[in-house]
Image 1 (cartoon, helix red, strand yellow):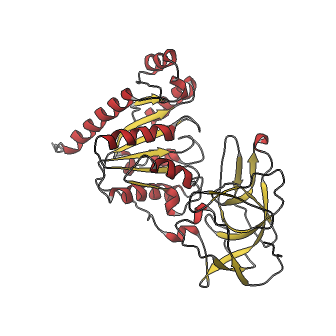
Image 2 (cartoon, helix red, strand yellow):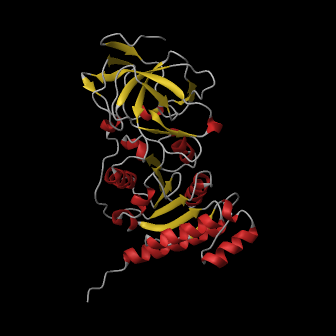
Image 3 (cartoon, helix red, strand yellow):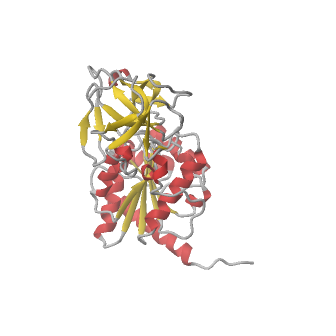
Length: 364
């Protein structure tokens, strides 16, 4: 499909819609307006794909299946931020006009101006801005869907088990899945969430394969990532996600923090929120190496959080498992196979949490 940027207002039939729109009920036909009145996180623009030669063209669809972008495709995209250790990073531009060039920065549908990239990932796919999308005369922003509402305070909810990591690819999702499966095998009702990171439907689908009773994440509230500057919004959406999950009255909620819990994805802000902290029963930290584990221990101590157990590459060998336990005074276990030690420790923390909650507060 091709179209020139000189066209005026008209309808566009969308044949490829990225996964960020799965809660937006975006129709197949939208009206294209040749201007961009809102340059803000979540704003929906229409872009045309330029040359795909030598570029990454993968797109995640609203069904979770994959598709490839082709030169000339017109797709709806979302303005957002991304930060990566090894990959593409992008920012929301300060201003935007029809004809400007942006870059496809996430398979879920995020576009922006280049912030930085890893040469190993090749060149970013360029897209030309065609204008804004309107439905029923209204400009679109994916935050308007409000599937998950923002919450400032949380009353009593199910105890929360946190799975956080010092870096990407340390086994956070596989650990979360094993924790969920353990409790499901005991006949418990389990909800789970992804609270920070980039918005990918694939990550929620992985958690859904555990037979968890309800799976949700910040992307259900219309956030393209948690790299945004509005930290209050990110924390309130995290609390809103927990509120949403608690509607099914689960026995336990398993929460995964994407990427690293220190850095631009704002996991620290969520973890340190008093409204969030008071519901934490256990914290599993997946660390990449001994220095990362040491740093995680220092940070968690500063934040007033106790690490229940270490896992991840740092303890893939028995010798380093012993080293971490002896040096940091925190139990540890390899997460690549069964995790009986981790689950025993988590269950113990859950029981302690329930006893604290059940005990009356004594006032002197």
